[in-house]
Image: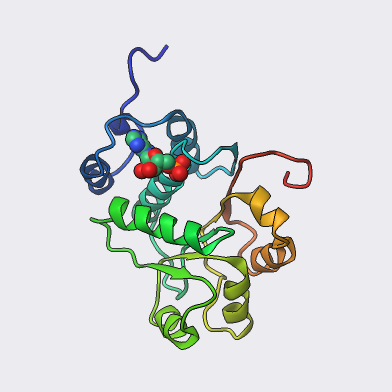
Length: 198
Ligand code: AMP
């Protein structure tokens, strides 16, 4: 039995991540972080019912960065991790958490969403990125034009899946998934677990 509070250092994180966690002022992992981080690091898929405010964003961001650091990258070009979220605001929030928690990692995180300069995002994608955080619609546009390949994505995160479903993004999400490798890892977070989400 676990006695006392759990610590981040017992979750299997790298030194560089632990330092960023410390600098972010997080002293103890939240329950969802304790439950999901070791599972993600073991390479398994995760299906988690999680509301906002539980620390779910840091849970997948910390786990993704740790995995990217521990696994040797393939020599192929293209993002190694893809995070899908329903809104621009959420994409921005996830990227902010990723900047903070990945402060000491050499990975490039690229936000993608509609309503901003198309060419700018396009050239950023072409210059090479490690992690894409995107709303489905704009990402599909770029993928269709073969701006980049999703063929080397090691981990796919679907955040707020229920909202994505409510907003009608499911067809786009399916199209995106079909462009990623079958043997990828998938993490799905949703506030509710309706049968359609499962
Ligand atoms: P989220 O559920 O991802 O929307 O996160 C809710 C808030 O919890 C965010 O402001 C995070 O910065 C914060 N947070 C995440 N993990 C921790 C932690 N281990 N300790 C304290 N705050 C945290």
